[in-house]
Structures are given as structure tokens and as C-alpha cells.
View (cartoon, rainbow, N blue to C red):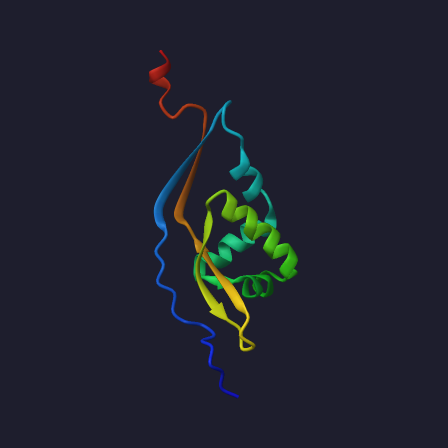
Length: 118
């Protein structure tokens, strides 16, 4: 039966080229804690291919929607992924579409400019 809701409208999203994260004495390692999870890494790999909804991601990595939501929330909090669109299920339920925020993430330990401390 046809539906009035689009199920998968095209998503036009281009992630930023690169983000640098410097881990030092003053900055907590939230990014490291988030990406240390196997589930978070699987989510990032899934989103590298194309934007997806929570249920699509959960199915792709063979986990529960609740577990995927937990990790998606943390990945959003540290800025590695972002909500880029809203799709609708066949029943009309709104579904957030997630995509990578950056193409390249560089994590550096310590001051990025050690010469400035001399």
C-alpha cells in the first residue's frame, strides 16, 4: 500500500574535512572513551558508507535499538556524528538520520605547539 510519507528521501550531507582533538591535562578524554567501544566503532564504519537511521544502524551492526541509541547519543555529544535529516517510517513515525560530522579525526596527546612553552 502506498504511503504519504517519504521513507528515504535523499540526504545531501558533506562532513567537514578534518577535526583535531588535543588531549592534555586540562581536557578530558571524552572522545577517546566514546570511540574505545567496539559498538561505536561499528557505528562509525556503518555511517562511513552512507547516512542511516538508528534502526538501520542497529540492524547493520546486529545490536538492539537501545544499544545503538546509547552509542549514537555519545557520538553526537563529542561531535563525531550529527543528525542530518528526518525520514518517516511507513507508519509515519519520525526517524532521525545520522551521518559522520568529519571525514578525518586526528587525536593528539599533549600541547600541539610545544615550542610555545619554552
